[in-house]
Amino acid sequence: MSNLIVKERDIVIPGDILAEGMDYLPGDNTYREGDKIFSKILGLTGVAGRVIRITPLSGPYVPKVGDKIIGKVTDMTMTSFRVDTGTAYSAMLNIRDATTRFVRSDEDMSRILNIGEYIVVKITKVTSQNLIDLSMKEPGLHKVIGGRIIKINSQKVPRVIGKQGSMINLIKNKTGCNITVGQNGFVWIKGTPENELLVTKAIKLIEEKSHQEGLTEKVDAFLGDIKAPEGSVVTEE
Picture 1: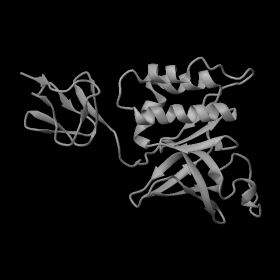
Picture 2 (picture 1 turned 90 degrees about the horizontal axis):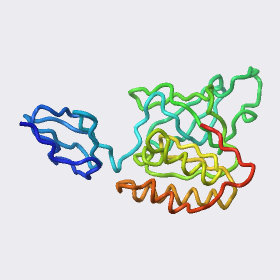
Picture 3 (picture 1 turned 90 degrees about the vertical axis):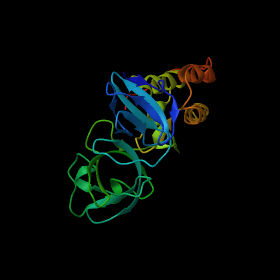
Picture 4 (picture 1 turned 180 degrees about the vertical axis):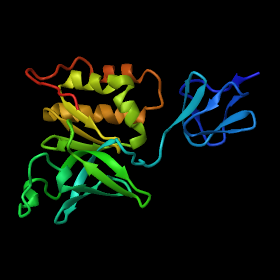
């Protein structure tokens, strides 16, 4: 007879038994030994049908193809830009992937991107040598202009975004800020200075209390009855 030992959103540590019997299947960050399923990491449990998975509570960001991240331009060569992604991986953005317009061979590359600027990019390749290729040639990928950049634990990104974007849309709609959350934990916030600060505090609250239930209600209460500035337009990233 199978037995589910944990509940949804329980905190578990490596080696904790999650389920007994063969009716349940090991998902992300779990493993089976005999008829038992164990946790590989410190994290929160999730059960989808018969599959048990663990969402990490800590740990570094691991780049994946297709991820949208926020990086900082740190250097440039004759044909590409080097980008700091906040990871141990070295990332490069080829000039042909940095813009959709024609670039002359003798053009000053700093007219496209300059050292110290932040960019919203997509990961197009990750090699076994820990090298990342990036692109800006899709909608929603761009140079960051204005606003503020904050850094959170990348493992808390799913909680900041929420199911089907529910959490981040709540914050956007209440504050009128444009917000882009990179999978690597960098977040770009642009709005009025007061509301940028409010969004920063709300996101830090989510990061701190990500393991708790009823988090959307807590954030809603924290934001209170604030109204977005008149005329503000929140765009989808």
